[in-house]
Amino acid sequence: MKKTLIITDLTQMPVGNEVCVVGIDDAGNCIRPVCKGGFLKKYLYNPSGRIVIRPRAKVEFDLHPASCQQPHIEDMIFTLSSVKGKGLCNDKEWEGVLKLSSYVSVSDIFDGFLQERSWVKTGAKTRSIGTVSGATIINVKLTTNCAFR
Image (cartoon, rainbow, N blue to C red; front, top):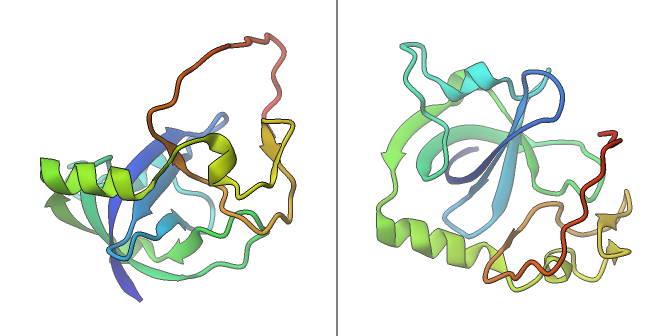
């Protein structure tokens, strides 16, 4: 099904040449477009080299349900050839989509499935992505031997 998303997030994956892209559709659903082989950085650009997929961009995808392990309920598969840039949203649209997709706390994002204030169990029946608005950082813990999974 063809669907236009307003891209809210674009994150470099910890290893390799992949990115994670998140957008909100016109019904307020959070969607993470995924594709076979991973979402490579080069997919952010159109054939002429112009960036199409970036925060605030309106992008049309041909999306299909993905078979994925919960909590990744937002994942939908797209066909690379279906990606079409539809411009950028204006300030009012951007503010509206961010308000629509935000939560008061990290705990609220995960519907009570947050474990030890830091992770969600595989198989939890909740979303895996969310935006926190008005958050206050009270502590930051840095570690040197991190392993990404």
